[in-house]
Length: 69
Image 1 (spheres, one colour):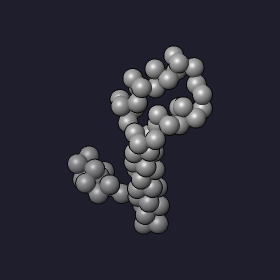
Image 2 (image 1 turned 90 degrees about the horizontal axis):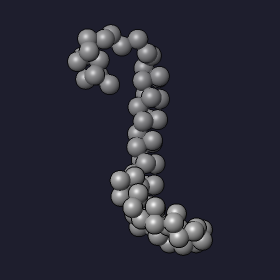
Image 3 (image 1 turned 90 degrees about the vertical axis):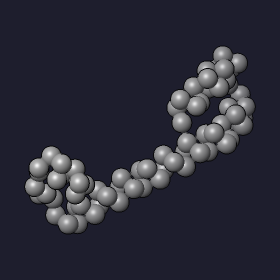
Image 4 (image 1 turned 180 degrees about the vertical axis):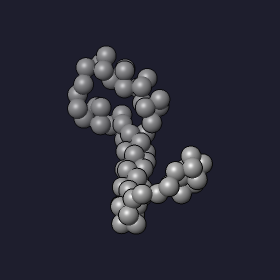
């Protein structure tokens, strides 16, 4: 955040607490995305089979899995 503020020549107006909360939320969000993408690669096919989706949706999942991750 400091680097972006310097690059765009913007003065920080948020309080220190709000800066830490934003940083924490972004870090947790990235962590959740990392876990979800890893699980979709590892267990995606098993989840699709467990949901008993139609064959066409299963095919769409196999094609869309990697770009989604």
